[in-house]
Image (cartoon, rainbow, N blue to C red; front, side, top):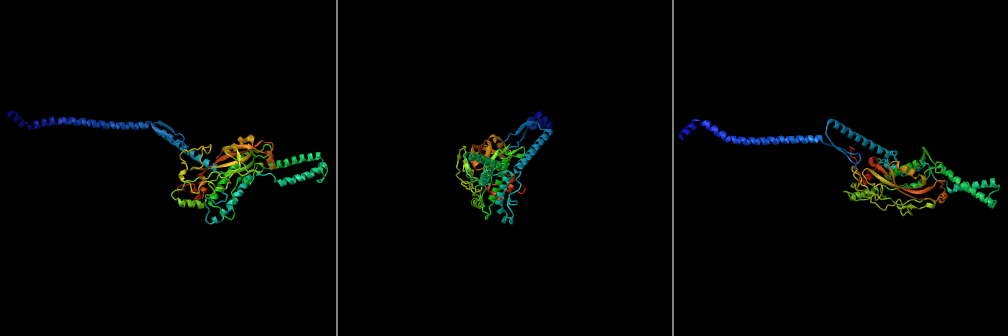
Length: 481
């Protein structure tokens, strides 16, 4: 044992180094194995990340959104590259340009011919100085503007009965003198009386026919059912906007009737060849924008009582029935099923609707497809959206029964109007003729049309008085627009 110890002492460094080698080698082998696994995991992680990036690039999801809310988007997967990105940007820019141009065109069509106010400077709100004058002028301008609509449409009425009678008396006097050589005091024979009666009938029809050739359609100011108003009292802002909006609506109705009564650019008469499609306007009754109970005072009172949000309130439906036709059709109205009945309400009454401003949340989101409700209209449209106001109007006409499609086309191609309801009944031509309404040989019927008319808020909101915007739940525009 001693020689071994002596040798270890003599070679101590060698012995220590051998011991270290024996101890360290397993540790190094274990550490090396751990380091290899860590490096391999890191490399594998980087490879996976790069693979995912390449996968995303090679199968990028490209989405081209549609113009109309609710329409299908164009979606596809493809590899990204500079050319593809340029084309995608060009497509998006083209769609944006098309949408902008379409929006501008739609607004221009809806606003065409509506640039002049009934009283310039009254809407949306006159200055403090003008408040003492302009409101008093609005009703007179409202009446005169509708008289202009009739005049521009070639509308008129038959001769008054007393004027017709004067002409017939003069005709009889001349006929007796020229045909029988007798005066009015001489009694005629039976044969002479028959001949005179036939001549008087023919003359009466000739008088009616002459009047029918002078007009494109029979109508007078009463067909519009315009609101009366006392001159000594200034109307409030709700009436200003109601009358202005109703004038726009009636302007489109009359424009459609003019279009129906135009052939090759020329206006046709009630009687003649060619003759007009619309022989007589019996009634034009638009739905109100809001009930007559809605006033500045009522809205302010409702706002004070419910400052955090107004209770739900409707716009008020179609108020009242139809004004009567003269003669044999006086006091008649259409029911939804096509039967006729006597109207029970006056247009100016307000039996429904709240004076409070409707909540803004009751309007449809313009960025989403509007929900449809076919229980009230075949169009499914709602009168309350954030993009437009829809007004319905019932139009009663005497028309040529052979050319109804021409009438429908005239309405459908005038602004944004749609015929969504139609009812008809025969016309008592004899009773009409007794009132001077001569339609010639054309077969005529009485029709009632339900018409929906859309008014875009892109431009109408700029003319709404602030309190009207408040009633409709419209937010004030920000300075940035």
